[in-house]
Image (cartoon, rainbow, N blue to C red; front, side):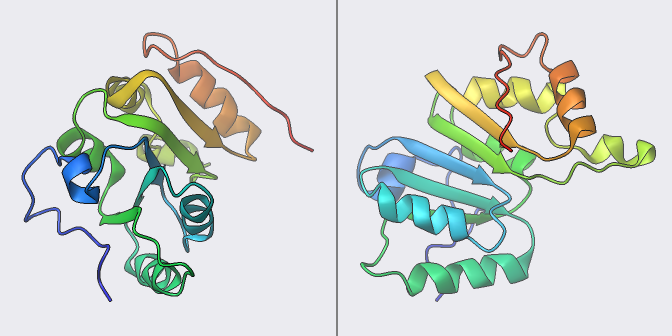
Length: 168
């Protein structure tokens, strides 16, 4: 039941994802996948690509693993990491190895004293840019205008440009 959960303590770093999946394919990384709805749906729709989900909350990981095991046909193109995304990108992914990196509605940590907990700060964005292949993309979806404005402030010097889509 624990597969496709990766024991990140027991693997050589950075992980050779082509070897992990048994093929070379575009690599998608979803940070904070919740209960895995989007992760599983994306992996089902794009069987030619490989997907990695990063989540810290065990209940969400467990429910996502159940969702993966219940998929028809079986999904062989998903791996799950139960850890902090900063540490995962820093230690488990080589430079220029990720094609798509996304986070759907990350916690905006709205209180002033909690801003330090926000993931998508300038340091993390520089790291993410280093891990993306040429032409790779990062997508962060939020419904918090304050968080969106803060993220735009983080962009200078990270190598990212800003593209805003308002979906109403």
